[in-house]
Image (cartoon, rainbow, N blue to C red; front, top):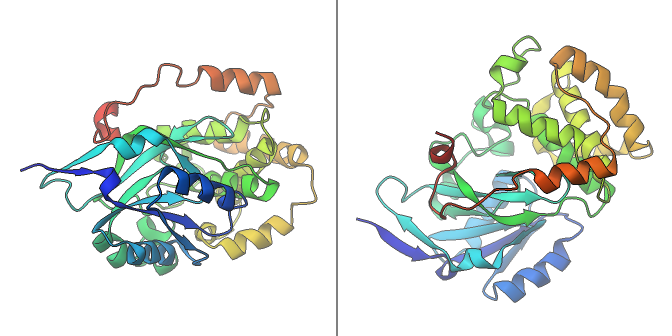
Length: 303
């Protein structure tokens, strides 16, 4: 039996940590979703999501990250729940403000309180590769096809670098495990390689876009070509310390220093995209995109 739930009937939790655009976005969220609640400053992704669950008065809740602005039409959508998905988390795509990518990173999600309060991920990982830096490998965590928001990750140079660095790490992994250099092209999902290449090369047409590119290249370089512990990517204090070591550098020079090794050792395309080239790419990327329905899974469309 299908249960229909209007998204507008669910609690909406705005989850913030240190995003420089969080206050501006919070005003926007409250104007769009007057019933929204805010959870702020909880350290650790696992702990923050548990705090969001505790703040919700509904068994299901919508989660919006601090750097995300939803499309207004999302709150007019209706969930359709059945025995297969009733206790699942749904994660919709977001548009990226720097490189135009549209995938789950930074997107709106809809959680059950039970899932959030019982999971063991990130800083509370149960010790498996799949839970060290991600939520998404749980079979009850569903990637959805449609795009319903925009994630704005370039308000400052640090925000842009950190966003790029984190995806530069995570796009390299094989279900949370670091592959060897020789395994890299075969073990990493092709969609992740495509997204990684865009992170590495696109975005110089927007403010701080060059820092997102430098961060993405640095994250990939440190994960695949050094002995750095890639699981530290989930620790924001570690990332803040790492940022201090590069913040005084020119981002284009930083990105350029890693380009040859990323290309020769990992066979990753490296291109210095000019402003016009980057803007041209984003204009035509996903040019024919259309949403298929709020309950359509990403895998269904890919298949």
